[in-house]
Each structure stands twice: as C-alpha cells, then as structure tokens.
Length: 397
Image (tube, rainbow, N blue to C red; front, side):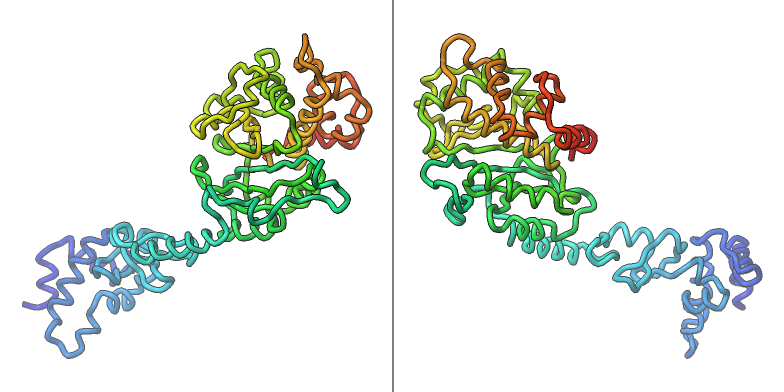
C-alpha cells in the first residue's frame, strides 16, 4: 500500500497533511501528529528516515514557526502553548506543567529538581545576612553613643523594625540592607512575617538612633521593602532599665495601658493590636516584677532583664513616621521622670502640656508637628516639618 493510500484511509489525517503541504496551515495539532506518525512509520526502514521525522517535515512545510515537536515526548504543540526550557529546548504544555518550574533567577523553565536546588542555594545566600531570632545583637555591637555623650547617664534605646520584601525587591535585598545598617544593627528572622526580616539595633542613644536611621530611611533601599502597608510588621522600641527608676517604669506602664489614654496611644502607634501588644490596667508596683516570656505580647513587655519594650507601634519606613514614634518614646521617658502620680498626672492631657514646653517642641519637632496635624495641639509646628508631615500622610510605606 502506498503512503498516499494509507493517508487517505482517514480523511481527517489526509486533510491535515494537505493543509500543511498546500496552505502551510494547521487546523488540529493532534490529528497532524497522527498523520506525521503514519509518514514516519512508513519510512522507518529507509536509510534516510531522518528526512521524515516530525521536525524535518514541519520545516519542509514551513510550519516550524507555528508548531514544534516536544523535546521530551515528541508530541506536537503550538508555539504559543508550550515553552522553552533552559533557554534552549522546546517542550509541550503538558510536559512543561508536569516536569518544570519557572526560575526567576535564570529567566527560563528548569526541572523541579534544579529548582529545589536553586531555592536551597538562595536560602543559604540569604541566611548569611539574616540571623536567628534569638541572636544577641547587643553582645556583638555593644552600646552606641555619639562622641560627646555621657555613657553612664544617657538612656539607651534598642529598635526592632519588622519589614516585608516588596515584589520588586532584589534577590539580595537582605545583603544590601545588612551592609547599609552594619555599624549599628543586624537582620534577624521573625516568624510573624510572611516574607521579610527584622532590623534589630544595638542599644543606642536617642541621638545616635536618629542619626543612624536617618541615613537608611532616606536611601533607595526602602523602595524594596515595606512596613506600614502590611498586616504583619511592627516596630518595637526597647528602653534600657539602667537609667530608669522603678517608679518611672511604673508610670510608663500606667500611661500606655490607661483606658483614658487608649485612643491617643493607638493614634500614635498607628494600630490597635490585641494579638501582639495587648493592654491591661496597670499599677505602679507592676514595675517591680518581670513577667514570663509567655506574657511578652503586651503593650509594654516586662519580660526582658535589661529593657522594657514598647510593642505598640506599626512598622514605618517613612522617615518622619519612624522618627515620630522614636521621638515619642524619648519624650515619654522624660515625661515619666518629671511627672507625679496624683490626679491627672498620667493623663495624656498632662503629657500634651509637657510637649508644649519650648524645649520639648525643639527636641521633638517631628512628633510635635504630628500633634499639631492631628489637632492634639493648638500650637504651630515649624513650616518645614509640618509640610513633611502632610507629605507623609500620602506616602506611608
């Protein structure tokens, strides 16, 4: 039986071959494949059978721009259905879905096994710059002060800024952030984050923190990570106990947890978290006791030996947003050092009167501008800071 006779036994197969040869068109890839199978089978004993394989025939019929033969299974597929693996071989859609995954790193499809190896290598690269959650940053870096500050009397603050990677983040964003904050902070893992890390500083003076963070927050790195517009990231501020009396710690506990101050505190914090920063009524003597680690998810965490931790704040990578809560923390400490315990001494309105003092308006210009913007103060902030505060409301990150 001739080849033509074999093809004519099935009108559909014959029609596909005719369309391919005469019009250089393909109506049905599956039927065309079966028809080509008849041709290759007919010439299987020919010494030049390579002339009649699928690839050779598609090229001869000028169909190789529309249809290809899969490198894995030899099935035919349309060009717009399959894909290229390892930037070289073409495979059909079925094999692509079954055997390959897309690698952003190589910009091509690779096998599942190679993809897993790639992910493991990437994790190892990232792990070089992200320490375990319990890594002791203070032991490595020590306390940080400006050159003219009294190391014995100056209050220290440790900051934990949780961030998530943006979709456009460089693969080595952890390395870049690590290098940027290397002098005063380290990156640590955090189980509460989806795809991020926390930037944890050594204990530093207020002025040192402002200077060090100011450079980072104004860098382009903040365009690749986010804090404010997440449901996962917070900002925690540790305050050293060494320069605080128990009564001053007690005042901070009462002030933060007071029902009368609740809305004011939530406004400053940018969130109200019953999961990560619970509030409970406190009394002055609560400052005398360390709580267990299981109770660390309170608004003021008292479980640490050397610090109390304000856990109330939402993460913020905007320069003024970050500085606002840092200034609030320092202002609160100095308020606690001078205010009393009687009557309305720990009411937020007493704190607002403290903030109206000229020296405090000067020391905490960003926080004071926020108080004016939110109508907590009837005063007037500096024009420059006020404009920056308005800009921050529209660009929170």
